[in-house]
Image (cartoon, rainbow, N blue to C red; front, top):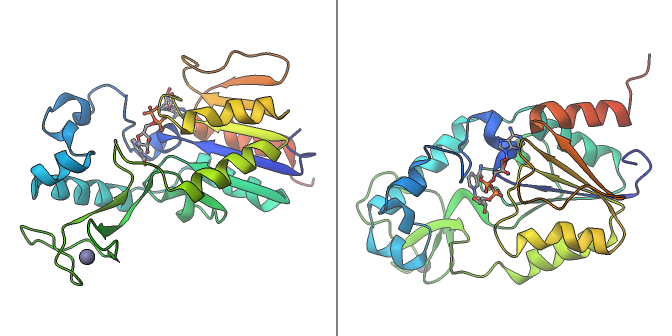
Length: 238
Ligand code: NAD
Ligand code: ZN
């Protein structure tokens, strides 16, 4: 199906980066859910209330992502893009690893940690080195990571292009997402209702749409399953 598809959407979540050493949101021992102060950072009010610790925490996450390397799962997704005429990668990840693995047609639904953005004038800039208050060079406003916080809307154009692609694809591959975050979680349903075959790659199928006629569960890690999918779809010439 992958080989014959003219339009493919890959939809990824934090699980695709787990094998690169980046913690998922809901994996055990993640400080995000254990520390009550830290768990307020991903909201506009919580972030502002805890400057400078909140931006230092995000700067640290940005550094951790920059230090991580793409794994064979990211590489396989970039390979699918090179083989399929109409392709879109829709990711919930903010770590930038898909780009670094060679993916080009990417919609980052939740933004990214590469840069900061000004709360007031939206100007983007590099992470500040060490000032206590990270302030915008243009207007003096507070800097924040260029990600979508809880309580904020996704940029309408990114969500629209993700929905359009899900509606027209023949094959939809969901990888490493718990499907808990709305509105991203509606995408597999959109694709299935529009007639696509849906493949779900995850180590744990809790909360996923049940397997059926056009829904296939591939239980395993992204770094193991995705390269095998690619190798089966496009065997190397002997
Ligand atoms: P999640 O943490 O809710 O779920 C992770 C999913 O990945 C789970 O279903 C888990 O079973 C699965 N998984 C774990 N290891 C895997 C592996 N090796 N291979 C395949 N699947 C694996 O993640 P989510 O659904 O992306 O939602 C979390 C939110 O947090 C998103 O909005 C995302 O923006 C953000 N987030 C991003 C990163 C990142 O950029 N790397 C990391 C943590 C959280
Ligand atoms: Zn500004």
